[in-house]
Each structure stands twice: as structure tokens, then as C-alpha cells.
Image 1 (cartoon, rainbow, N blue to C red):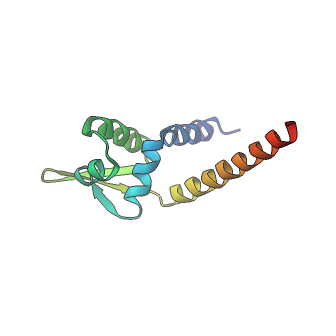
Image 2 (cartoon, rainbow, N blue to C red; image 1 turned 135 degrees about the horizontal axis):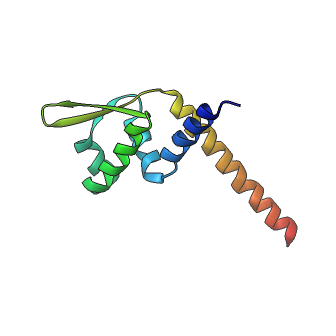
Length: 106
């Protein structure tokens, strides 16, 4: 087993384990967004947004750079969207399976 790879995988999932961080990643999409665009679009307080952005950058999901007073963010690897899509399918499937199981128990 590759413990380093497993730890890295876990860190990526941890970084994506908050709904606001998922919303941020989806909002940025394949483009570049300034934090001044993200906060109002997602209705997040600047301090809250900063904490989420910091974690996403630390884990390598986003990269950032400064242009004057603007701090821009970009997705580092577009395969993150595939991960989110798969997680969404699993969540939807899990929800359907739970509903079926509850019906069976009734």
C-alpha cells in the first residue's frame, strides 16, 4: 500500500468535505475568479470565504495569484469536477437506496 497516496487522497476529500467549498469549486469552474466575485455570488462573508479558499489552495485544488489588489483563483486539475460528479451520483444513488430500504422496512 502507498500510505502517502492514501493520505493525499484523504486530504483532498477532506478539503472537499464542506458544501461551501464544493460550491466555490463549481463556481470557479474552468475559469478564473477573484475572491471579490466569489463572495457576493455565493453569499459568503469574506472571512468565511477566505478560510475555505485557504484550505482549497493548501490541498492543491486551487491555485492563487495576486494582480494588484485582486487575488485570483483557478482550479489546478479539472479532474476534480469528475470527482464531484461521481460523488453526486453516489449521493443520489445512496438516497434512492435508502428510500427503498425504508419502504422495505415498513
